[in-house]
Amino acid sequence: MPDDSLTPPDPAAPAPGSTPLSGLERLLAGALAVAALAMPVLLYLLRVNEGDLRGARRRLDEARASLRRAEESAGVYGDTTRAAIAASEKSVPDTQPYIVVSIAENRLWYKLGDSVLFTTRVATGTGKTLKRPGGKEYRFETPRGRLKVERKEVEPAWVPPDWHYLEFAKKKKTRTVKLDPKKELRLSDGSSIAVLGHDVVKRLPGGEVVTYAVKEGHEIMADGRILIPPLGTNQRKYLGVLGAFRLYMGDGYGIHGTDVPTSIGTQASHGCVRVRNEDIETLYQIVKVGTPVFIY
Image (cartoon, rainbow, N blue to C red; front, top):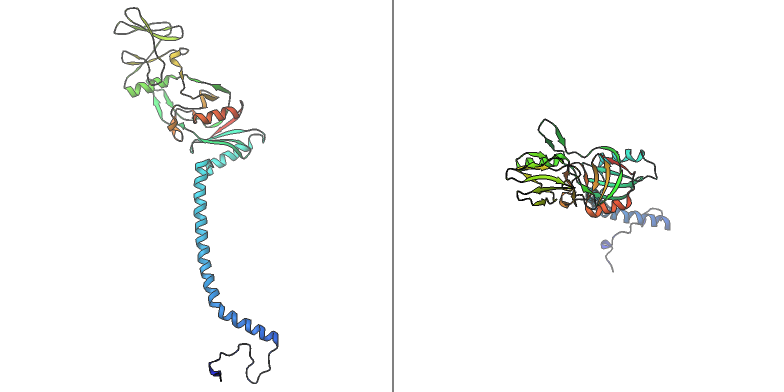
């Protein structure tokens, strides 16, 4: 016969001398007994799940931070630029596309309302200052405020201002000399420099005339000084420096391509907004004359 002392009591069985339990009461008593046995396991699982939840939250925060960094590198702007763009959006009609340039983030957005139609990295002004004899200063900053696309240009030529030659002379540790288009500049070797038609030429002592090549970085030297060619001459025009297209914004400033693609994403220009050549081609196609440009 089985030993009753080794048989576990039935949790649903009535105590000796008590009234027998109904079927429902026995069912409830059994459920409570099972719940009591399962409680330690449930508490353990809750502690594990709580730890997992904290880990999940931490991973979510890390993912959000990573996404923010990715968005910023892809052209989703920071708080300062976001506020500036919000102000820009309110100042143009909903149907009017516009351009926003962030100097701090070196990025351009072409937008319609709050929708980004196109974005790319840019190069902006260095902020450096060049002093010339006499006290005048040139500060190479990208202008801030509201401008507009005044015209669109194909194969734009860069006409260097005087400061370009002053800057070049400073690098060479020499001075500049301006060429008068109506006079010859005589040199120490017996030759002279003059304007012939639209070209700056050198007349050699034997009468031979040589036209100066046109190339940035190879400016004309006159007895050790940097020559500033007259405006309107071919030697005062550089092709290819601005890329194939330019969106001109007035006062010498523009959005254009570059022959120094490694400068994109930095403060490297003398005030204009540089973009990659493939990007200026896109902008030339989609941006219309009159488009507002907000620079911050």
